[in-house]
Image 1 (tube, rainbow, N blue to C red):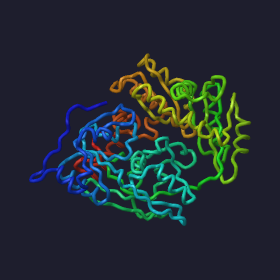
Image 2 (image 1 turned 60 degrees about the horizontal axis):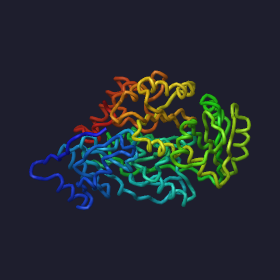
Image 3 (image 1 turned 90 degrees about the vertical axis):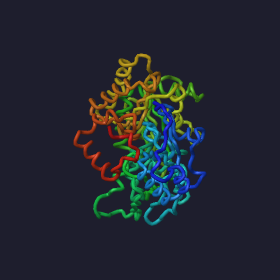
Image 4 (image 1 turned 135 degrees about the vertical axis):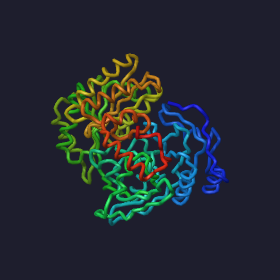
Length: 463
C-alpha cells in the first residue's frame, strides 16, 4: 500500500522547518535523501510503503520535546517509529509525515534488585533488554520473534503480546511508569515504579496500545520476572486443530510451569521446512501441532512429560534435548520468514473466544477461498490466549477483500480484529466491528485533548 507523491514541509513564517530541526538534533540526525529514508518508509512485510520529507533522530527527551513543539507549531504531522517491525502500517509515513525515530534513546538503567524493575529508553531493543536483565539474574516477561529489532517504545505503543503472554501477560502488564512527550512538547513523567499508586488516572496505561497517537514514549519503567534456570520444550502432533486446541486448554489448566503454547498446522510446517531447509520433526504428516514450553527453578520436564502422557488426541511427540531446543522453536518462530518469501502477505492477527477457536481455524481458509480462490492461508498463533495469526498470500497488497471477509468473520464469531499488532492503517476501516460509536467518540475526545492539532500519527487507529 503506497502513497504517491513527494512530501514537502510547510514553512512557518520567518523560518525553515528543516533548518530548525537540524539545529535541534544536529545535521547528521535529519535524513532527507531518498536512499537514507527508504528503510524508515517501508514496513517489514513490504506491504506498506510511504514517503517522508525527513527522518529526525533525537538523542534526548529534550530534543524530542523540541522537535514535537516545532512540528506542532508548523502543523507538520509526525509518525513516531521504533524498530519499524509493526505489521499493520502504523509506523510508516503513509501520508507523507515526518518520521520521528526513537532508536537513539537506548539508555538502560541499573536493574533495581529490591523491586525487580528497570528503566529503559524507548529505543532499547527487546534483545538488549533481555540481555541486560539476564546479567542481573532476572528476565523480561515479553518475548517476540523480532526481538533483535523491536524496541521498548514500539512495544508499548502497540501493547505487544508475544510468546509468553500465557504466563506474564503483554506489555501493559509490564509497565509501571512512563516518560512521554505530548504533541506540544510538554514532557510528562511518572517513573517511580511504585507497585501501588492510586493518585488519580493511570495515564501510562492509556499510552499502551495508543499507537503513537496520544504522546511519544521516551522512557519506560518496567517490571522484571524471575529468570528460570530450567526449561523444557515439546512438540506435540495431533490429527487436527480441534484436538490441538483442546490439548492447549488442558495444559493451561494443569501445567503450573507452562511458559508457552504455540499452535501451527501441517501446511505451515511444510512451508517452513521447504523454504528454509529444516528437517521435518516427524516422519509422517499430521494435521496440527502444539509447541509447549515450561520453565521453573526446578526441572519442569517430569511435569511436562506427565502432562503430555495424559494429553488426549496426541499422535506423536518430540521432546527437546539441549541440542534440539532452538530447532523445535524454529518450526514455529520462522513461519513469518517463510511466508514472506512468497510475497508481501496480508497479516491479520485476531483473537477468538476459546469455545470457537477450533471452529475458526478449520473454517477461515474457506472464508478466504470464497473471496480469493487463488490465495493461500497460513495459520499459527498463541493458542492458550486465543490469538491466531491469519496470513494470506497470493493477493495483491492493495486488495482488501480478504481482509474484509476475515475480519467480519472474526467479529461474527465474537472475536477481536486485533490481538497484539494494533489497528494501524491496515485495520482502521474495520474498527467499528469491535468498538461502538460511543467508544470511538471517546477515543476521539482523548486524542483531541492531548493532540488538538492532530499532528501525532494522524492516519492510524481512528477511522
